[in-house]
Amino acid sequence: MEASQRDRAAGMFADAWRTGSTVGTLPFEAQPRSQLDGHRIAARTLDMLGLEACGLRLTSTNNKDIPSPLLQDSLVEDEASIAVAALHGAQIFPAIAGTLAEDLPRRGDALPIFATLHPVLDITCWRFAEVPTTSALAAADLGGLGRVVIGKGKRLEAMRLRVSVAAEGSWKRGIEIDFEPAFIAAGLAARRAGGLERGSILVVQLSPGLPLVPGTTMVGSFGRLGRVSAHLI
Image 1 (cartoon, helix red, strand yellow):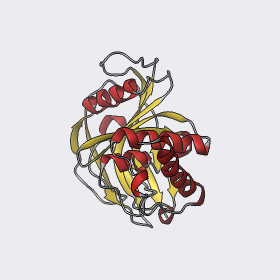
Image 2 (cartoon, helix red, strand yellow; image 1 turned 90 degrees about the vertical axis):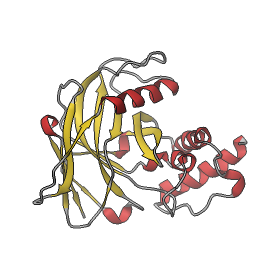
Image 3 (spheres, helix red, strand yellow; image 1 turned 60 degrees about the vertical axis):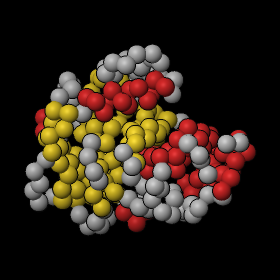
């Protein structure tokens, strides 16, 4: 894929970020042919917007892992109010964030070492008018980065946690999840991208998402890791 066509696609995404509009169909020549093309378009979009990543976020499209930059502006605190109308094609996912206790070098395949782990509600949002169906398009649109609601951090070792997301006042039996493999995959993706500095954040989604319903408060329960919530308005 030629650099001029990547710039063309990135310019359309940058305009959508600035204006809150959506991107219809990319011109044929500007469509990413591979996930690598998609990552390059995303990186160029951030350059155009003057934004820098504070970590990496790992999502999935059609059972393929999609690593994407995590932006400081996308992080919001526990109990935040989220305007649903501003998020196109949004869903809410339980996730876990880890803050790196030391630099993550380019080489290696071990589980990253975290200072703290955090319960997360990962709320996706797409710049595309239609939710992308390929990993290449998803990567170009930053893996659907929307709002990442992050709860209080704890010092915990990797373990199995019973995880659920449900509307406040309702009850949902959680799914027991071993999140270590997801963090190993996120660490490998970060290493392939050049590594990360201490203090950077890795976010991994843990289970299928739910639609957003305005007027509800969604609560994520993560066993020993705690809870996190978001008010949908």
